[in-house]
Image 1: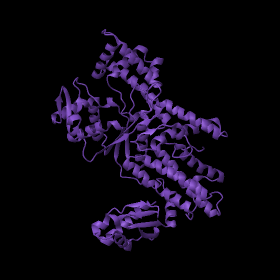
Image 2: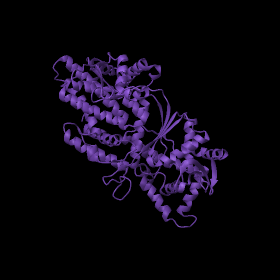
Image 3: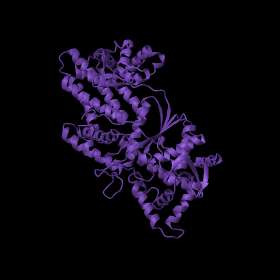
Image 4: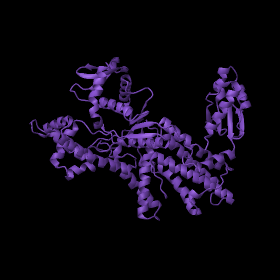
Length: 581
């Protein structure tokens, strides 16, 4: 299957070389969709000044050498020098037909790269809240998309599994019993366990044998590698793994235990990070702490902002761990491209970490690092979404409510289905609605969480797209045909047929663009536009009651391709496609 924009771009570039010389053959002709034709070439406007000629003269010269008769039925110069290109119906139909037997549906297979992808990153013994939703959903969609494009994606779930809080958590675990109901709260309500430990710590007296003193001592034992303390720590982490997996299973993401790469992973590397930075003269002592002062990073009154790699008490912070992480991902994982799907407020931190790593020689110039910045989820009041008490909204609670609301809608619209089928549809629709609402907006922007809007069957929502593919399945059931057996000869005589076929040809380029730009909302927008094209198609082009058998077979085949694209596209977003709606 050929991408129309790529085909036209190559043809116009060839004409540029023929008209003005080989040095112009690599000029970007800027092929864009147009309201006046299928596509428009804007090459003349950019070249006119360079050539000292009028844009329309440049376009006329290009037209003399432009050979697109096998692809376009009409080519004309318009306006100040645009070249309007209208594709041939038989060419469009042939390209759409080719999608039927293309398992990749026109998505190019890119040269494979090793891509560590850092996302989700909850904390051990703490609840996953709505703040974890976006990094998990966006990260998982990028992982799916990059893998589909042919890359080796190495998921890195950088969980918070180390540090001073584990002293009090281990002591609390010992007091309540490792196999007690209180300990099992870590798999269902980790915040309750954490808060109980925190309360004990805060209310503890000054005596040497009190809880707080024991907790501080336990931190020392943990950091020194005491085997019994490590065993208890592993127990805590194990409970939290069970909890994480319940949330990931409910959310339908691809993270597993094999993807866990928490802060503790890098403990043995931290001394070397500091020693190497100091020996290279990159890090220096300042007020008892080991710091890196980078050119260009200043704060108030133009004072340099330090990246603290070893605190004055000898402890290590996030910067040290993140530097060790970069070294590991480059040296051990052989990264070509490292992606961090993390909240936008961390932007400065990552810039400083990467600049330090590059100066130290740990991050080669040919290894790309990208912060996929994640914006906040807002409530109806325009503030960060929280409960009435001001606490972050529990992610499990939010997902359960989405499914409950979807179940109420399904019970009303599909009373003919059995209870088990309705429950399965409600799960797919509810979870899909939450995920799609997140993925349909740019990842670095804020959006307002609104169940009513998310679950609507109209507008740019997950349920609308799920319904679009379910409607196609319904057409095939009514026609007594298996979508996979639709193999009619596609024709695109009607305008709505033409528009739908053209939209289907855009799937591959959009997926490639998502992988290059790391912007899943572009795929969401494409799928929404595809669903709208289907609605217009149904309005003007009856499928099962078409005027002729050949027309019926053509339209069945066209919507069969649309079904494949919708299902594959939703899957790349991590949204399931129910058989019924």
